[in-house]
Amino acid sequence: MQKAAELLYVLGDHIDAIKSHIIRMDDLTLNALFTSLPSKAPAGTAEMVMLLLVHREMESRSTRRQVNNVLPFHTAQADRH
Image (cartoon, rainbow, N blue to C red):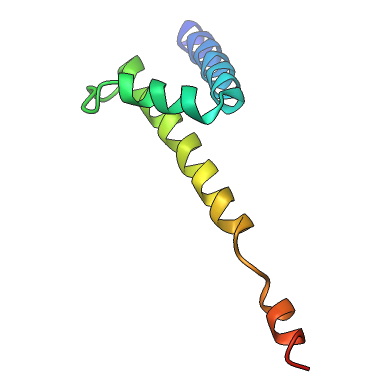
C-alpha cells in the first residue's frame, strides 16, 4: 500500500510538471501537439492524460479570450446617462 501511495505521489508530480510545460507553450506549438496526439487514445494511457491536459489548456485559453472581448454591462449603461 505504501509503495502504491509513493507511485501515485510521483505520478502526480509528473502530471503537474507536464501541466506547467503545456501552460508555457505558445498557441502554435500547443495546437501542433494536440493534432499529433491520437484522438481515440485508450482510457488510462499516457496519451489520454496528455490529450486531456492539452485540451483543457486550449479550452482555458479560448475562454480567457472570450472573457477579454466582453464589455462590462455597467460601462454600456453608463454611456446612456
